[in-house]
Length: 90
Image 1 (cartoon, rainbow, N blue to C red):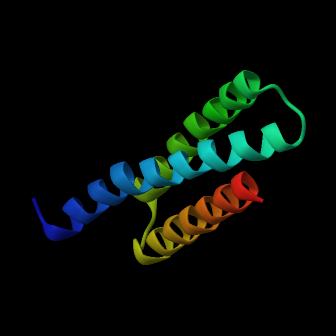
Image 2: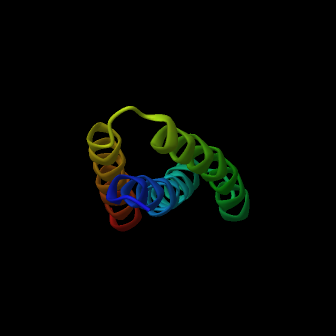
């Protein structure tokens, strides 16, 4: 397999997973802060994370260039992790 294919698979699997993980974490914290019950906040955020994973993985596999996809997924991952940390401890 070529390096390009390996990079595409790695970004599609690992990058999309980190993106979905940050969506679930930040979503659960923000929904809980907005007054939703903790269990419902986790459930809603997990469902949104499943859709986010699907979209990010499909985008990584069909994108013409990988670097914009990688930059956006990493940037959003850092932003959402920072937001979850901020709202959890503030």
